[in-house]
Image (cartoon, rainbow, N blue to C red; front, side, top):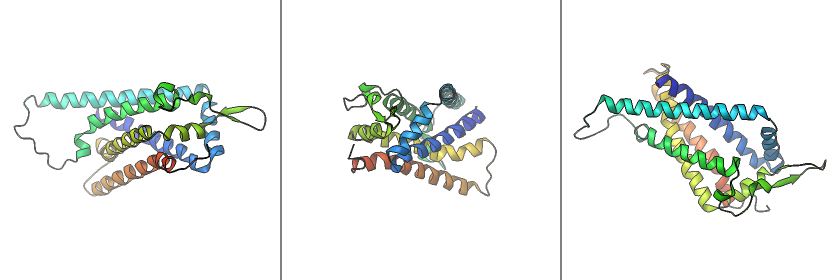
Length: 223
């Protein structure tokens, strides 16, 4: 179970980094982010293979986490009279809780920007109708406008920052424990890996929240 959770967690970490780098193209302007979005949407069957594969990885990660948690509880049917954790961090003690909340956030995020369900975007606008006209007479989805309009909602941006914050709290421990579970961690470089995991989680947090923060501060106000 720990191997399964470590491997699936590593795959999800790579996706989180790649997704962040793709989203940050919004700061390169409308052309860059819309070209990126069009490239993904025009991938056809390949895009669905990736989506279904990612969904399977998420399901396996959640399942292994829940199963491990239940096994740990079953191993100690009688609770501590007074629980005083030693050596564990808050992130490590709340991995299951933060993971489930992050899962709920991901579902909302997919409904918001992938499915483009109007009921959840809190703007009253249809994101699927946002189109950018191209010089050749064709059009493509205006991802730039969708992100600008979407994050102008303070509530959406606040929930996004909260979700990403919990995700990065999860990663701050998960990225380090992944090496532990795979047997690639020893006392010599344990502190370095733990520090690297926290720095990586912080970098991911700042990268993701820079988008809604910039938009709330006026970026893309011409849209």
